[in-house]
Image 1 (cartoon, rainbow, N blue to C red):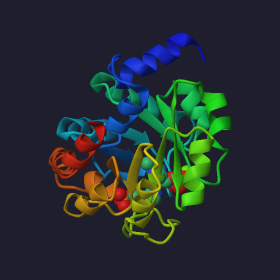
Image 2 (cartoon, rainbow, N blue to C red):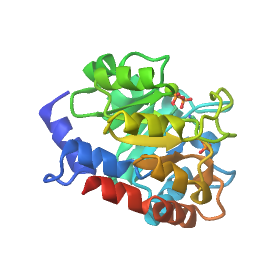
Image 3 (cartoon, rainbow, N blue to C red):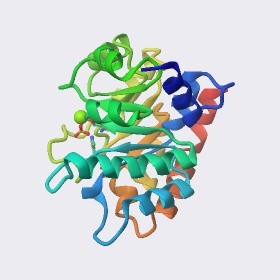
Image 4 (cartoon, rainbow, N blue to C red):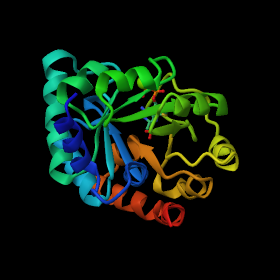
Length: 242
Ligand SMILES: Cc1ncc(COP(=O)(O)OP(=O)(O)O)c(N)n1
Ligand SMILES: Cc1ncsc1CCOP(=O)(O)O
Ligand SMILES: [Mg+2]
């Protein structure tokens, strides 16, 4: 990975005067996750993403997974289209799971789970400037991921979700509270069953933001749903950054 790649990534999601961690924390606020299987029939994923960004989405994860998911050239082509939308609007483009794809398209980052390689090994492949996110379900997993160099943690599922058939049991806001009480200040984004009307306790528990699939992709208006999520996640994050 060249220095140019890293400076391009920085420009994509950060004000040069803002610290790397602050930029990542800010990006966690309304984090949309989507692949072709999440997009209602007849809708263009790039248009849905544009609408969601117009409403206030601050980060995007390309998660091409599940029955009927694209593969090969079609997956690559969709990744590039959605990445172009993210670049147009200056928000990070994160790839879920697929490190080869992330490297190929020079994504701003990657999100991996507990069954994947540790964050340090992932970073060695994708480059030092890339954002590396890791899912954590216990304090031990969280500490290990951060020790391995993760930039942020995905914490959940907070509530029941219909978007991930193999999700673990919902855990509420307990882990978020536990991590903050233990003095962990790293960027934390909550996931699982989150919608504008249930985001407040998550932010109060210490999250920097919420990551959602269905609350935006299945909403009558992606723009309006994102706007409401931006409103529901406004205050606690601003307080933490002071
Ligand atoms: C922001 C964020 N948090 C958690 C996840 C879940 O990742 P994982 O446990 O690896 O499950 P899959 O998404 O790969 O099915 C995520 N994708 N994003
Ligand atoms: C990818 C993922 N990981 C834990 S829950 C989940 C799905 C989140 O989707 P939704 O926001 O529709 O519940
Ligand atoms: Mg995964």
